[in-house]
Image 1 (tube, rainbow, N blue to C red):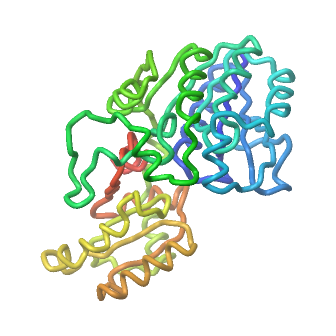
Image 2: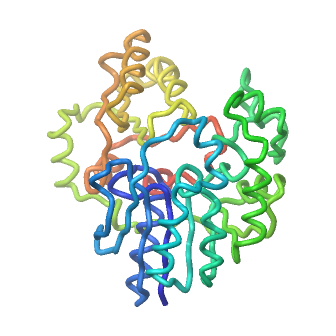
Length: 337
């Protein structure tokens, strides 16, 4: 059987959980004897073309980074990639097209193009971007961050307009909903709550399929852990609290830092490890840490993957993912467990 995966982001050019899920799924399906190809986009012009990643055939199309405003308008239908996607569908002739995150580049019109190719189409939702512009937080009280009302995820157009202002596209949600309900053979959500949210916002016939990981990938030997202690120059007498992933406020990173003084009053040896990208956001977190008197109680490791990530889990006293939005199934929770 020939399977084509389509996703905006795919390793090694991305760090998102969806890309990792696609990679793991593709490797498993290929090991079962299927012919697997991944189609992804890349912002680096030299990265476009055909190649392989970890034994998986990958086709990448170049598409420059776009603004939030542009993304709101092209996420339902991006005419600038249509001809290239249709050509690859014609070249590959897949039996199944499994589509993951396509809200930024490929657009939800990919569902229609895939279905018109004659393939069976599966769509996996990893977040709320099939009906919202960002991760969903409307159901959380901003002042006192708890759920306003259990299981009420209906998003109003007034909320979308208020939050997105000039980037608000009144046609976005209806078009995406139309594509999902008409051109997809199976819609999958990675958690029960995400399924509820999708159905409350007009997306029908959603099933739940949880993400999975290869457990052995996240077990580190004592030697690997020792090497990482040395590499990161860490004090073994500390109790490490580990956060890793995209450095964004919706993941609760600032709240986590603001909690640390209280934690240290109870556990003086507590030390924060943050494995996020070395960018402007890390600099702002470092300034926040300094303002809280935490300069010596936090270490930024940069993004970690592979054996180093497994070792980080092993040496940590606590791994935390304090998301302030609907974050349906963060891989880090499973990897840490």
